[in-house]
Image 1 (cartoon, rainbow, N blue to C red):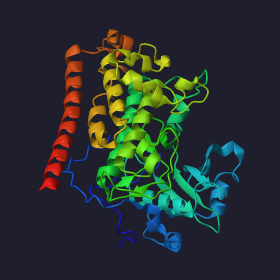
Image 2 (cartoon, rainbow, N blue to C red; image 1 turned 45 degrees about the vertical axis):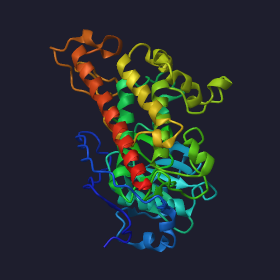
Image 3 (cartoon, rainbow, N blue to C red; image 1 turned 90 degrees about the horizontal axis):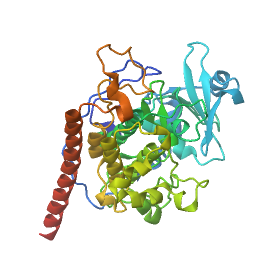
Length: 426
């Protein structure tokens, strides 16, 4: 019997994998379920509250799928945490590349800073979360170490690093991400959030979506990482969480910053910021830019109101290699996610539906960051000039499907709100 019965998944859990992204077929989209209204007074529970008093359980329980490691094992795997093995560093601690001598398995090991932002509760949250939630777009937790006051987490190794590494401050040798790879990354991140919001039971609010928390494998498949700040449902549009506001400035939803109120729509806002980063190649907050351009959302807001100006938002490193209609749709999705009023933002299921039509390159066009088979001799390469323009009819059909999906989502929510208002007035 699971020692954490509050966690389950409606859908079939995906099997675990370690460095096995290559050759794995994409998972089918989960069937849509009717969204059940939740009581307005139901509040999200901090996952850390569920972890109180459970250190002994996690340290010695066989019910947690993650493997336990000794500190000596992890020190050996990282050559005693040498600087040459360091992959990155943040407010929660340092991440090292490690390799187990017996198996040859390569892993990423996060050593939590004992004086950092992530304490015992956040550590337990991440172990609990990643042990019990499984999805192709969530990073796989292999194990953990809780020897004495040491706190370490062992993840599958994502060889391409984070999205941040491929979007900002590129070296001269780095090739910028092409348009369709950016949209594939956005789609993968949105699927991870959709799973947390709609498939996890109770739902999970991620709370810390940003480009540095989206990791990429060697085929640029994206997965969400770092779940220490996550919150549990059940939730409603007006549900509240603890007053302590966490997350990263520039990505947090405005209502969360103002009031501490948190819903799944707060994650939708953060996703809109990341999508805007993918479109523009700009950071959410960049103090090196002129004052009026330092906040990405504030800089982009006037452009959202003038579709003819949408090309001004495109990352200059893309040149003209992007589909104009695809850009218009991507900017429209970002603008909807970044609505000031949380109830006006779409659900992640709507975002997934819309992005699924924008992330596939037209036939005959090969994204530069996606490994592929040798091209077939019958493909007409002239179709790949200036954004890989394919047959106009197929593009129109795809754009129409996107528009219909977005319109359907908004119509459904508007009808739901009308029914709720009618019920409350009776």
